[in-house]
Image (cartoon, rainbow, N blue to C red; front, side, top):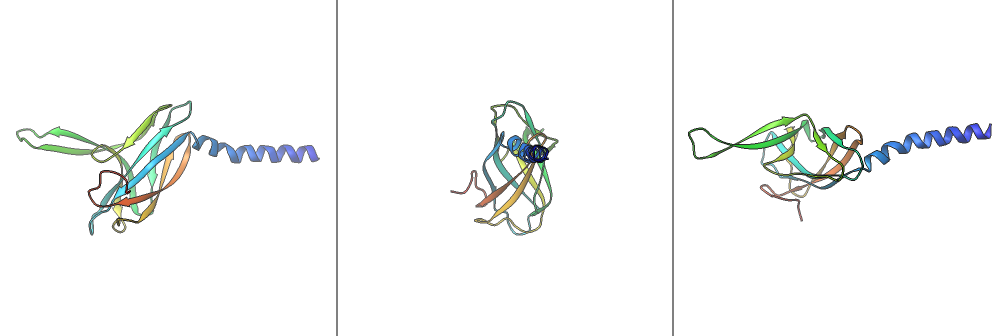
Length: 156
C-alpha cells in the first residue's frame, strides 16, 4: 500500500511540474506599454520573447483585465498611392512563432500586443497584468509597467 501511495504521489508531482517546465522554455523580457491619453480606446504592450527550449512554440493569444479584447498585431508601412506621405496599417496576427534560440522583439511600429477597448487610461508609473497564451508553454502572466506617452522603450 505504501508503494502504491508513493507512486501516485510521484505521478501527481510530475503532472503538476510539467507545465512549469514547459513554460520555462519561453522567457518574457522587458515588458512595457505607453501611457494613453484620456479616453483613448486602444493601447499597446511591447516585450521580448525568448525561446530557450529545443522546440518551436507559438504565442497564440493574450488577455488582460485592462481591456475588453487583446490581439496580436503587426504594423506595416506602405507608400500611399499618389502621396509622398507614409501610411501605416495594422493587421491582426493569428500567432507569433518563436523558434528555438530565437528572440522576438515586439516594439512600436512593428509587431505588438494591441489592447482594444481600454477600461481606463494607461497611466505612466502604473502597471497591469497581461496573460500570454502559448501553444506549448501554456499561459504566462507578466506585469507590464507603463512608460510615458510616446516612449520608445521601457520605463527606466
